[in-house]
Image (cartoon, rainbow, N blue to C red; front, top):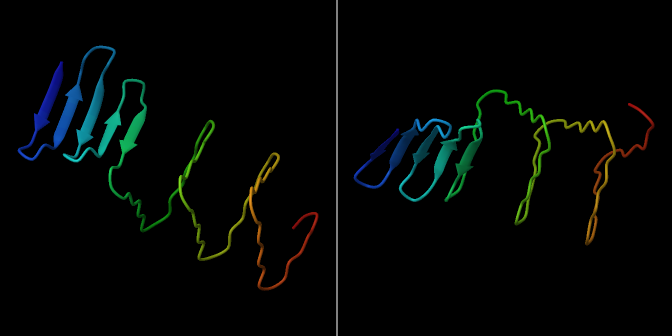
Length: 112
């Protein structure tokens, strides 16, 4: 039930129609791959750097829990306004220094 094509350099494309274990996998020779598993799970592994580039809008909807682990430094740059709307509690834990720089007006308000 498994149809595999491998190129001379080692790229692999696999279509597995095994009943109950159907999946699709496309893999680069260095190990980067995308796989779609029988339950609809999609897995990406990137061995080198990864980039997502959109020339128009993008939306992310996650129905369930989302965990992000960054094992290094992180920077987020927004070249416009930003709004964070939290419809529950917000807890922030900073284990070292916390610095806040506001270059114009800082307002503590009850609502907008």
